[in-house]
Length: 213
Image (cartoon, rainbow, N blue to C red):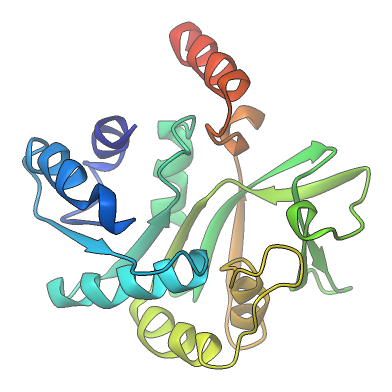
C-alpha cells in the first residue's frame, strides 16, 4: 500500500513523511527508502489518535519548506489519479481542501450550515447518529502551511479524546478550520475512493476495482 501511494502521489509531492507505530519503524523505513523519494519516518509513541499523528507528520514536513502539506491515510489506495489532479488544481489559497463522496450509510458525515460551510462532523465509530445518506471524506486532505503549523497545533492543544474510542480524531479539525478560513470540497471521481482497506472484504473489493480500472 505504501509503494502504491508513493506512485500515485509522486507527480505532486517533493517529499514524504510516514507516521508509524514504533514497532513498524524499521520495516517501513526499508520500504520507503526503496521508493527513492526524500522521506522521514516518524514514530508515534502512543496510539492516541489520528490528530496527534497528523500533528507529528506536519511538524516534520515543514522542514522542507513546502507550498502545501497533503495528508492521507495509508489504507486509502483506491484514490483515483483524476481526483488527485483536481485536488491540486483546486487548492488556491484555501486553508483546507479535500475530496468528498456522497454515499448511502456513511461512516463519516460532515454537517453544513445554510451557507454551505462545514460546521461539524459525525463519526459512526464514535457512536454518532448518522444520516441515511451523507458526505464523507476519503482520507485525503490538502492543508496550507499556516493551517498546518498554526491552526492545527492550536486545535490539538484543546481537543479532547472522543468518548467512544478514547482517541483524539483529526476530522473535527475540518470544522475548526472552516470557522477560520476557506475549506474547499471537491467531488471524488468514484465512490469507492472513500473505502479504506481495513478488513479482508475491503481488500477484495478494492483489489477487484483497481484491477478493473
